[in-house]
Length: 325
Image (cartoon, rainbow, N blue to C red; front, side):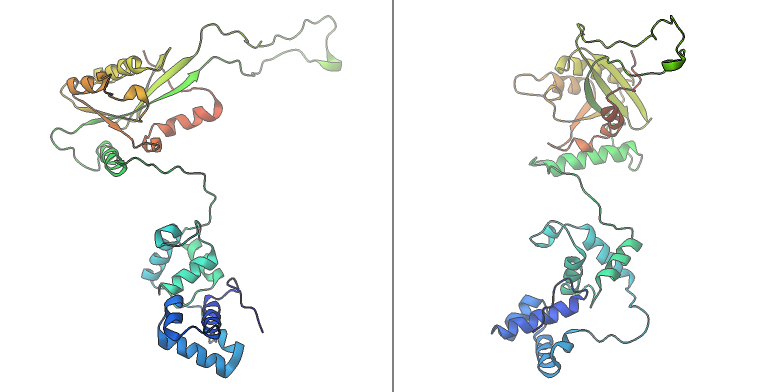
């Protein structure tokens, strides 16, 4: 008796052992062929060879020579499957391992056989490596595809990949808020007399930057816009983050171009950005100002390109965007 594991190094060995085991359990040839994703003739050959040669028939007898070469089509298909999710192929696991991926490639007929190490080297040559992923919240917006397609089309206009049709926006802004912001002291450097053992007698204490525990002026919020065509950032500091302040900033963006130039503002679904049943000011302003408000899908604010401009500020806790007006 011998144990043949899935991670033994060869998918072919594991497949042959699976066929023999199912045959020993009483499954007919047609059933084994369906489970193993192969032909009935192949199943009969494996069982016959096992009855004749025993366990040695499970191991492929490769001849000498250089390693097998995969065609360009095979390499592209392997790369495509490796970058896909197993769930897309109806498989009950979330991540490909080398053994599972090799097994799937053989079962789908992409390759006849491939070792785990050979698969790893092929993927590395194609620029695919196993990487740690952050958590991801999938959007449940029922209009996800339509909203995403519209935002991507506006990006294509801004990147000059497509020519805007009559009535489409010519200038694209990505808008979002950053904050709340407040003034905080940060450690700095200065030239001062030496301390410790070399301290001068009678020297006054060094000047220090004192903390501010009492802040009576409240906090501020940054309304920022990223103009994609000119690669410019615009920002206004506001005391509050509401619909009235948002419209003030939109009017400023509208004033940067002549009224006959249609603009588009891409923003998320934050409530001050929306036109609601009780408050229609945003929609009315857009209709009267030759502007389009394009919303990213729910839980998909990553589509807004201004988020990348906020990444450094979010990490350091400081705002370095130039504030205008």
